[in-house]
Image (cartoon, rainbow, N blue to C red):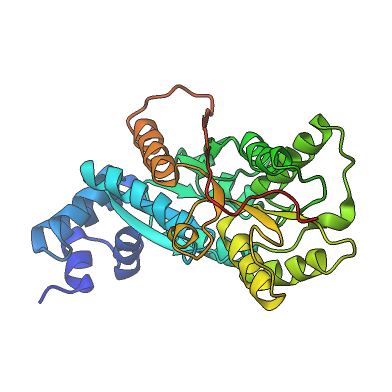
Length: 336
């Protein structure tokens, strides 16, 4: 069996030099790199496609980092990305940041070490310098999807979060509600900020004052949403309606309704952002604002492949997809 020492001897370099070339880590002169790759191909030390990738500086691997792999929305994004990647002969390495900036940083570094050809990710809101140094400064394209990092010079595929949230709240206002709570999620990410902005815009358009006590600004997790929903729904007077700014927050809200023995829409109306299969399968299906998650993944992957082929020009671009309101029976008139 061919060993690393055999490759190094055949290439006329040290074992450490051969190791740096084949691992993609550390500096090696171009001449030495070519000799090691040729030796690896000739001795069949690595699969031929790997050796060719080292020579061409392409791995045909795309990195994908999502914020929460358990979230149906992000699994749909992943399906969209992988379908386009597969059509063009690329593989996808999927990583999960779990809404944690430190873990996201580790995942980004892991993908950089794998020498992926490009990165698609839903950011937690930070790690801008790392992204610029590990990818963008090296000419490796980065596509942000669902969220964006302020000031990062990279393409983005987003939903109209302000407009979608405004649609959701208007559905409640049209039913006669004026005291509406919101589970807005983290304000450290752009989706949380934008959906809260859409909520405020809808209220202001109807001349209704913004009430800070009706806003939950916790994490995008079920437990945080459960706590925020309890805090809002236990106020007196209790709000007559609730808007959950994503499907995970909606799950927390649904649990709170059960624990408080409230039924929608008889006791309280509820609208969610992001449709998920469970929302139409429960006893009282939820009205929701649906955004095209799988399409967002497909668009992000297409943008990335265009960048890899030298298209789209130099300036970053933003693609905004339109969500749509799906009316079910979780909205009714306020209880008198």
